[in-house]
Length: 362
Image (cartoon, rainbow, N blue to C red; front, side, top):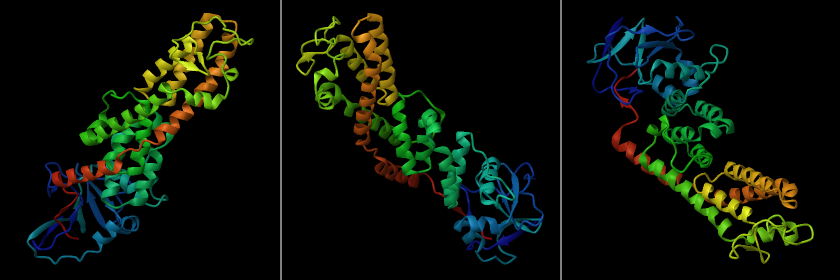
């Protein structure tokens, strides 16, 4: 192993947020296949001291960044700046750890030499995404996003996906994840990835959540949309507590202030509406409506009303579907302030850190 001196005026991109030491307390070790090839023409050294012997061609084809980097002129020997040479190859220190670098490089390599990695850990996804963006690996970035931002994953990990989207500044995915977070309470439980986002981004999410909840209140304050949908009271006898003869079925009625087609509604339905919209204030999503519909059906069955008990289950589920449709219409009109959020984040990051440090030349 030897070192070549570079002149101070010559510099190259070190793909890190800070200078990486040229030597570590422990000697670097080689990476596992396929990043141990004897005919490789450059070495990438991870932050935890693992040497990846790779081919410039594969990285250059995957990224214009690498193509430009490897195309820089070679410095002459006898210069005053150190760069390590190992086995006749230039060693480039990077800020990524070996786990992240291994996943990133597998995406760059042909499938005949390395299969795409399976990214299951959310932190690992964040690290690989950030590295892909830093090195302009656009195709890899899209592949990771496609795998991560799927409905099944978003339904369970919406907040974590939102944090990842914010951290990696993916606007479309950020908006998509924000919509899925409506399934969570307004003030969610702590999650590890919350440390990835700024207070501004989190406040924007809470504001979006509250706006969606407020947009639904009109559906409970003004029932005219129900009359428009059903046209006449005979279509909703179960709501206004009427039997098949259009007489009062016997179920308790709500206050005179709540009327449909000039009639007071059933008290159980009034309770359903109030309970549902109270819950929608915290979780403005379809699941909230489904849950309250089933509770209302259970309540009616317990009352054993001869008119309502047989008809309410199917009728209420149909009404729930209508209410979910209205929810989707109103919440879709609420925009998430993603552009302003990311502008502020960009300014913040420009003040607190730089993307790359220029220190070596190849």
